[in-house]
Length: 113
Length: 116
Image (cartoon, rainbow over all chains, first blue to last red; front, side, top):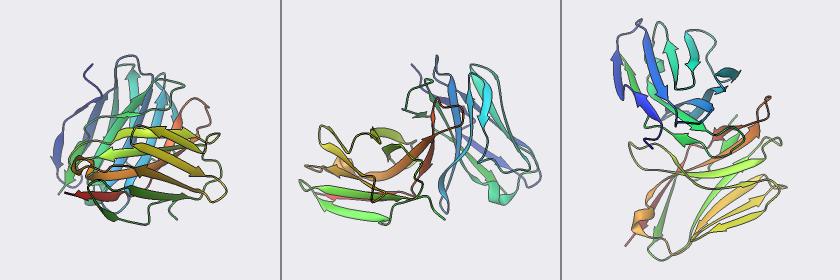
C-alpha cells in the first residue's frame, strides 16, 4: 500500500498563475480531505469529499480556490490567480467512510513568488 | 479565535521522564480527540485518539486523558525516548453534516524535545 500520494511535491508559481495540486487517496478510501499548513495558521481544514461528492468546503477561501474529485482514485485542488499568501504546504488525507483515522499524504509545498 | 489551542509551543523532557502535552478546545460539538506526531518535512501520523464517551485511553507508553467539562485533553508519554522528539499536534473533530467522518481542527503544535 503506497499510502496517500500527492503530486507535485514542490511547486513554484509566479503571482497570478494557476496551480493544480493532485491527490491519490489510499485504495478503497472513500473520504478525502484537503488541509493547508502554514507557520502562522498551523494546519487548517479546507474541504472534504465522501464517495466523490463534496460534503463540506467551509474552509475553502471563497475566491480562487476550487476542489474536485472526478473519480475515486484522485482529487484535485486548483488555485487560480495565485497570490504570495497562498504559499503553504497543502496536505491531502484519506479515510474509510465511517472510520476515524485520517491518513495524510506527504503534502505539496507551494511557493508563490 | 483558535478553536483548538496548544498553549506550550515547546517542551523539553529528560530521557526516561514523563512528557505531558496539553490541548484546550472551545467547541462543545467536538466529540473526537486525537494526537498526531509530525517530524520535520513529514506528514502528520495518528498516534492515539478517543471519542467523547471515553475519558482515558492507553496504548503502550501513550495515554490520552479527556476532561470534557474543562474542554481539555492531554497526552502523556511515559519513559520518554530521544526518538519521541517531534512536533505533536492535537486535533478535535465534530461530525460533518453528512455524519460519516470527522472534520478535524488542529492545534498549532508543541515541539517535544527529549534529551539523553
